[in-house]
Image (cartoon, rainbow, N blue to C red; front, side):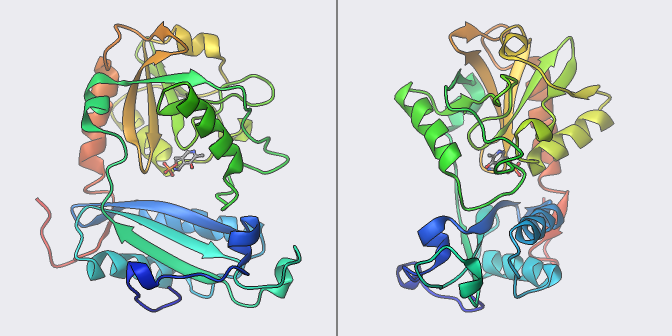
Length: 291
Ligand code: PMP
C-alpha cells in the first residue's frame, strides 16, 4: 500500500477515500503464469489511460508501477498469481469534488486465484442474456476501467439469479457487448467474431492477445457488430478475460451451441493461450528459467 508492504489484516483504507465513497478510482487485474506477468505493459498502459480520463495523477511512472507489480509477486513468492492493482482518488471530504483528495492510494494485492472450477473449462459453461444493458460509451465508457462496477454487478446479480456463472450483455441498441467481466467471441465457419469495443465493451487485454495469436495461426478475425441471433447460430462461443482466461460457452439462453461441447477452434485457441501466457510478458524472476 503506497509503497509499503502490510499484512492482509492490516491493509486498511479510510472511509473518506473517494474510491470507497464514490467508486472514484481505477484498477487492473493482471495474471502471472510461471513467473511471467502476462502482457504487463498493456495492463499498465490501460491503467494510465484510465487515470488520464478521470484526471487522476498516479504518483509513479509506468515503469515504476511495473516494478511495483513484479515486486508484489516476488514478495509473496508466487509463480502463478492474480494481481489486483487499485488506484483510488484517496482521502477527501464527503463532497463529490475529486480535487479535495490530495493523495491517491495505490494498492497492489497479489494472490493465487482460480476463478471458475476446472470442469467448466472442460465441459463449457452456460450463460444467459440479461435485461440490464451494458453502459453506453457516451455515458460511462466501458473502456475506462474504473472502480465504478455497479453496471457489471447488476449484470452479475441477474446471471446468479438465473443460476449461471456469467452473462451475455447487450448495448442499448441491442448488439452484443460482452460479459459482466469478460469479452465475448463467436466462431462461425472457422472465422472469429468479436464486437468492436465502441459498442460497449472493455478493450480486454486477453481479447487482444487472442486476436493477435489467432491471426498468427491463420484465423480471420472480424471485429464487427453482431446480435444474439448470431450467437445462437454460432458453431462455437467463448469468453476471454484475465480472471476467466479463455472459457468455452456451450449454452446461451437455453440454445445449445454447436455440439454442446467445447468446440475444435476454442480448444485449439485455448492451447495456444496456455503457451502465450508463459511467454508474452514480463519475467518476475529474470534469472529463472520457466519450463
Ligand atoms: N470486460 C470487463 C467488463 C472486464 O472487467 C474485464 C476484466 N475482468 C474484461 C472484459 C476482460 O479484460 P482483460 O482481458 O483485460 O482482463
